[in-house]
Length: 188
Image (tube, rainbow, N blue to C red; front, side, top):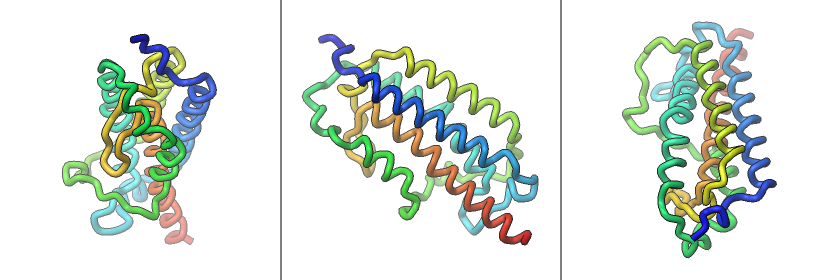
């Protein structure tokens, strides 16, 4: 079986790269101008601060995104499962970016009051996102014939998982923006 026959089109690749670039840029812009007090402010009980949201985005980029993609792409393609994921590209983006539905993080994701160096976080995130984009630009993996069974989404293919990760950045950037809006409304 030729794995390249299940790769994504040049249009799909272009879309994913633009989405990754756009969501990464919006994230960095959202966190650049917090003052120290508001960077760590939790908007409510059990809610993350902007610093914790940003750390979560970084950790997802570093430890979840590419390790998952590489693991799934190393498996034998399963073209017989393609119908399980067909047509979900847009719903993956819309579902993850729709913040009307709250998703409570696992208890191990509840951060302590640790110091999170924003400039180091930005530098690390930008480097890793750029590395992931270069990888995508040069990859010819079987994106459409390798699958992840994802809670709440069912079966998704690797391309859809990449869109999911990019949309995950948007979801938490929205959380950060909410904190920023709260910060400015309190200081007005």
